[in-house]
Length: 217
Image (cartoon, rainbow, N blue to C red; front, side, top):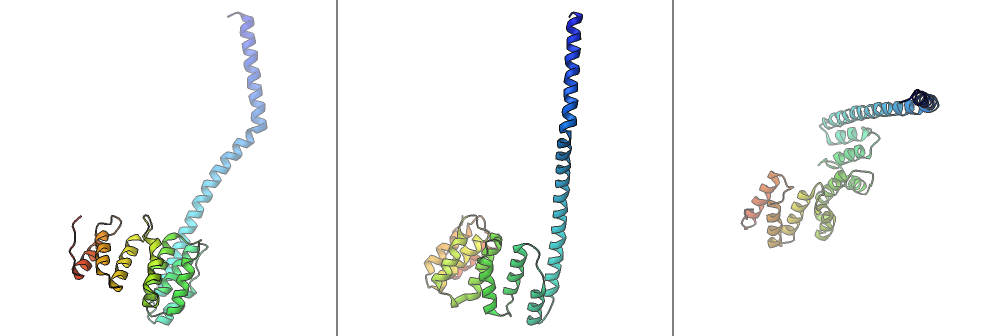
């Protein structure tokens, strides 16, 4: 390569470096800001997680302390005094615990369960659990048709309490005097993949009690 060509290349490279330096001086702060935002965002997320974990532990401790009360009235009063955090789920958990007190106010419990089940801000798990609890608590006060209508959406594949809802549907058939349908439902439950072992065993025992035979899957 001739000296003129080499000189031109050197000048070109110097111009490129000068342009890059100008660009860095003009826009380098953007790159620094992006790094700061990424690091700051990560730190914020970790702080939020830590705060939520701390709040959740404190909330759980307060609930357990309230449950230590022996008298039903004192227990309910203590539970009502627990302040839930900024999530709808904590309020739902609190209401579910109050509604699950066997010695509590039944009418108030049913109202609390209705509130949870109808609240779209509450996780589906707790809404479904509230429906299950309401059906069990209301019992014969609700017609069999109404209880089936309430439980039917919970039996959809993928719902968190599907096995329990299927079991309750079978018991409703028993209550209605339709033993054949109950046995059919219980047999399906014995091979339900999502059902825990204890529930499948309970379904098998119920089949035998109804005079049926358990079909091995």
